[in-house]
Image (cartoon, rainbow over all chains, first blue to last red; front, top):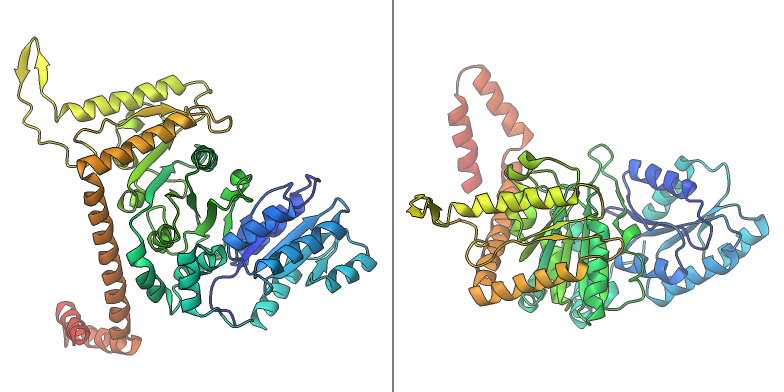
Length: 132
Length: 341
């Protein structure tokens, strides 16, 4: 069990500006007792990786509605691994087709949350992963 | 969970300028991990080189945007910058939403910039408990300037004055009248005032109110001439070490467009030079280290007190007091005796 405070980066990579979902999740995670670093919209994978490093986060949550997840997510995972953060949990939220989700998981994304996922599911996923 | 990185590896990495090691070391200090003290002890000899700049002010005055603009200005001349951005922790959930980075994007590819968001956790006065330690780590990692942005401060959140070399108090137009400007607290700790959002209505009034406050404030230490006669005011010189020879500038900035930011940076650098020439740097550092010493001793004493005041003992003493077999003062003396043993 991780004794220290759990830190989560919530980022919106890509060009769509729909950040309502990301903000709702950020707030729910805060209310669950996590420290949430919110970076805002239109982040490049490089910006996300740099923030994840400086903030020493345990979790990176990506929110993508633009359809560009197949390029953006593997890139974020690759950069995190390259900088020594192989142990960071990478989560993806958005409208992701099942076959893409399977490929992304193979590429190192730990979980994909589609529409209808409750905040409670995400929170308990993070808690279980941190406890494991 | 993976095994934590060994402490020595973090220390060596941090001193080499390894960013991940620095980030992890800050977390250890923040979490008050077992090796937190060891990390600070190991790097302390390498600190004292960075200029520590505090940025404080009410919520919504534009502190984060101003910090971002300052980073840009410093980087343009090759000066490296470490940033701590403190945001509040929810007293209800213990969680926090740290959003200062939203206004600080654009520096992520730059190895000369390191930005760390920090939740206040159990801190006080606008800073986190571990802010001072985290500043030491950024200093040891070799950053030329360390900028600390406090939580949106009220009027009495002045902890930043105990940890920074130069304090910039950020104001914005329309937040208060002249009376707000002469109140005690936040305004008394400023080495520099930045009236941000200066393109908005009322900026000139805010500047005027601050300048008026500064003039009436310094009048006490200066001779007053009344009809050509020198009046004895009898007032002692200012107790603040910002008094002698440093006149506090009031600057207008428009952080979003970068307006006035170069002047603000110049003022910070002038204050830095002034601290070096006047000996004020030593005085401030001494005060800072004294503050840190007191904080550490207090924390340790409190921890011992908590152990000494075990619930069982407390219950026992309360019962004795209720039966009037012992009075509260004697009970307290009893606990103190146990503590000092």
